[in-house]
Length: 178
Image (tube, rainbow, N blue to C red):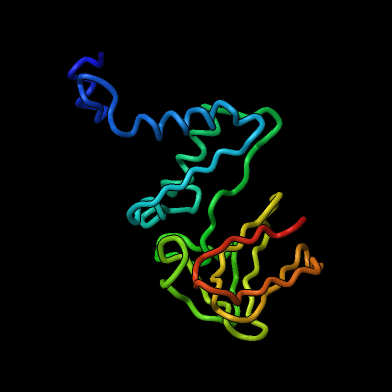
């Protein structure tokens, strides 16, 4: 039984676990297996999570949470990556320019996480990630948009060509090889 004063702070019912017990149990189980399987955490919220008011990308709410989790639950031999880097942000206090440049295409808030989406909807339009060392990049794209896209790593084409046609229209993910 949870003491009433602790229950009030944790959001738990004083007589027992709250509604989130099953979800938290699954998360804790994944966290315990972090040595063999990655744990994905998605933080969605208001502008402070996305970084409005932060003075640097590393000071966004989701970056700080990531760093705390990596400190408290380390994985031997793994330093971790950048986490989620949007293609664009509404923040006026820091810039994505050290990480991402775009040419062609148009900004969009129709898809993506938060307002961080961009339509690369023209021939020769591109998104370039610079000075980012990583093991994988997941491209979130719209199925049903028509056309194809391809990727390069360090300027070398991967030989991939991903078709964006299909039905129904929905967001999909493509992991860049290499």
